[in-house]
Length: 328
Image (cartoon, rainbow, N blue to C red; front, side):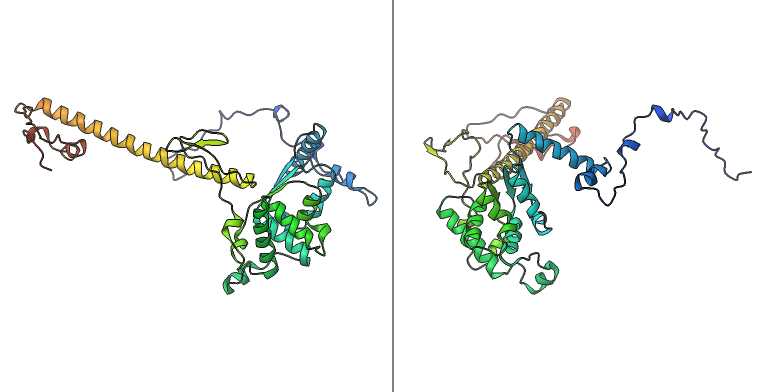
């Protein structure tokens, strides 16, 4: 016999259903199948289980084929890990097959791809180099990227195109493995954003790495021309780094909107506080029998809401006639 006073829960009302009536996400038709030694790559891919990542990969491949058939753009967004893990030749092959319309990359793509093209190796030991203060200090990498950025700004071309042009002009030993070289030769746009390694070289010049974006301030009209504060109309600065410009504009507008809504929220809270204080003072004055409206002479200062709010904690029984004027 149990020593506890509580009774066990009753499971008599637990409901169940037939297993065959339940929709399931995995069936035996989705299982992997063994392959033989003579199987081709096509058979191997078809033998994989149609579950999770494999299912996503097959759906992505189907959508890419459909986009190519309908002459739709296929834009790739990649980071440095795609390059330093050796997938650059795969993307180059897909580019040659018409499955890459444009590429959006970050600064690490430029670094890893350029180093692979020049010396055939990349990806330094971050933990070991940070402590010594030499992380990102490769002379050839920094010189190539910053010189390309400077020349690209002078020629009004994007950063990705400028680095690809400079890298291809240097005739690197592993040109066939470079995504930058391949995209430049194939005229496939590669938009790149500068990374931290740009600023760790003596040739760094911020004017060339990140051009001044065309920014539309709040309240200005959208389009290629903006109305300035004094009413005159001037064209926005046109730059070729359209992707960088768009990103900077969106970030600045987002920060401005957040600041605007934050200020509006503060004003809303202040207005609510003032309204509450007014109601408290009105309630106090209605319950006080000895309250009389003060007579103000010419030149008297009307008490502000902020001044009245400091008096809102007074009890109704102790409310006295307010002063007729408030000395400044």
